[in-house]
Length: 294
View 1 (cartoon, helix red, strand yellow):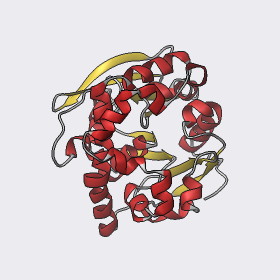
View 2 (cartoon, one colour; view 1 turned 180 degrees about the horizontal axis):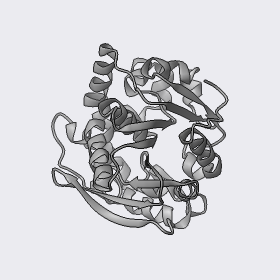
View 3 (cartoon, rainbow, N blue to C red; view 1 turned 60 degrees about the horizontal axis):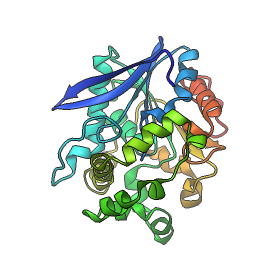
């Protein structure tokens, strides 16, 4: 797994270290995983991007996997997407990358979006997978949303989510080495059985309903838009399109240059459809977008 990549722990400030794998040469791109995965979810995609001529960086986000887990704060800012985006920015600088593309999946897409909004001079291109902005999701939190994504609100409660998940992490999260790949599964399995990691992952969701929503709303009210080219992909076998209909219409007011469309996959697209995902990303990163909609 990740043959030819270096693995390191990189200090990014305020006592936070990120575990990261990086490899390749060429234009830099950072890949940000979602919940409850670690950076190893990219184990099939990252080598394909390296083969296409990119320098690829795959960190565990703060709180996830083997990265640092800062103490919880009352305002949830320690696990805000702004804090996570700052980690990624400093990580990339430590690795010698002053400008780079960002790809984020699931919760990682919110970090990627926040980085593009907070540091527009740094992010050259943005790709978000299986998401709409947090503020937009919460604005549309009707009964269908609450039925399908009830976990957003359950995870925001104190203590009980940790108790429920840690009673049987395998039953809660599922996953199988035959589907995920043995080494990727082992890394994920270790994470979901670690009480500190489970708590930190839930703090990510708690921040989503607090400082992350507020940051999105402040940008929207101020008319801020993502200034770099943006690719939005959503998986056809998940429920994003069922909940929101026209995904690109939701993203359009947030962007200045938007392309996107569906991809035939389940939610964990880097594991389910790595070849197609890598091809779509390479086409976008190299300005040869092959997306069907715009």
